[in-house]
Length: 293
Image 1: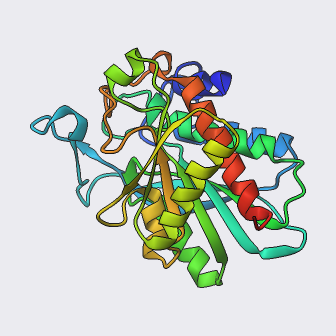
Image 2: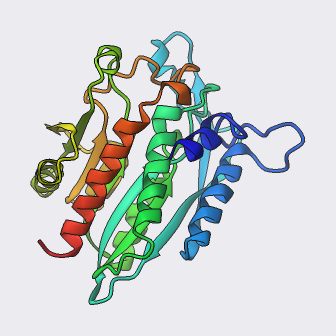
Image 3: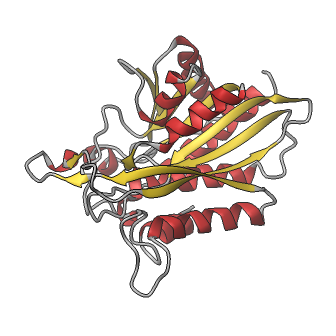
């Protein structure tokens, strides 16, 4: 995970956005990140699919507080094609039931931020789950989605709406977003938090499952559950499409990373062991659901 994190948020890719291309390179950094993820997934035996969505970069508004200096683009601003990147393992006995594990892979389009905690660490967390479960003989289909949330519109909206249009039976959605983003005092104290946030009762049951597997397997996270006032984040895109068994695993809620949406969100400040524990707990929850326990 550490090697993948530094690849996507330091060297060779300082950012992952459509409106920045490294000197001498033909592709923007977000496309290069897509190619990196696809190459890893294909090397583990997955078939990768890409789904194009028209998006714009946010504008920067320095009159706003630093963490929220983005504003809507204007109609004349450039349009780009962003891609949802998919890989999945078909289930053996119940392939029609789908468990989705997702993370947004782009960094902020309005600022030159490495986006290590938000959300390179969630991206490599989803990638690690795909690696660990590549040879796992799942009963249900496990689908991995790498989407985009720092450009507009969010591409998870398209992913969720298209799943609904196809009639996909998604039984659970786990979003990994900023899974090691936490207050500075918790970092200094060595705390290992995980918040599982949900909107609807079906999501609440998934949140309880995250706590149960953390306890059952002695993973060591300080887990708590938060009910959101309404659908938010990429899990919220699925809730709005009717897939209410959706949660976000995140390091703090309300989000309290002091480097949120800033140039200081660098991989050296990411608590990789904390993130790795969240990945373990998510794997345990996915396998528990898959086995019908």
